[in-house]
View 1: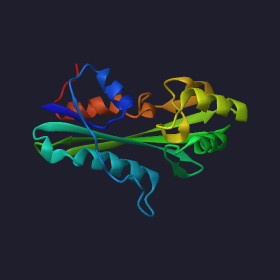
View 2: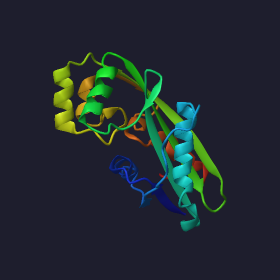
View 3: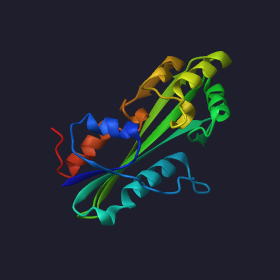
View 4: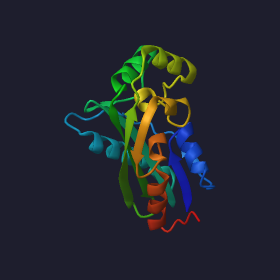
Amino acid sequence: MKLVLASQSKYRQALLKQLNLEFTTINPDIDESPYPDEDPTQHVLRLAKAKALEHAAQFPESLIIGADIVTILDGKITGKPRDYAEAVKFLQLSSDKVITNLTGVCVLNTSTGKSLVDMVATEVKFKSLSTEQIQRYIEKEQPYDNAGAFRIQSLGITLLEQVSTVDPTAIIGLPLICLTSMLAEFGFAVV
């Protein structure tokens, strides 16, 4: 079976490459806006599945991986910052708080139409951050392509006090522990 990653995210691609698997990438073009009254869990699971389904007809006899991540801050979904000012705002609001990242993943078997969908939650405790720290971080890291305006796999780790999760790759955008279990259910052995 062919493996397809429905994501142009360089972070997800790098994570999947760690497994030494050959895969193709596609760019899902779906509206990521939340539905009215959709809770964050429903939202992230729906988007992960929608991304896997979008190009399914083009990849017969394949396993398509879709994933999505959202950050929950003060009970609301925050996406990727649109600009510098929004990145500053996200990090100021996160200062000295615990936020939650939800990472949804879907594996679709295009031969059978069966899909598996799951989600991994990660709790992140931010340090108390000064305006100067936030500004320096954003200037150095440019985290505009990351939910919540921080990138844990590089300088963003310096903003944090604690991270709690069952899958440390989830916060980067693709929960590999969960994913490899899903692939195994479809008979796709990684090792």
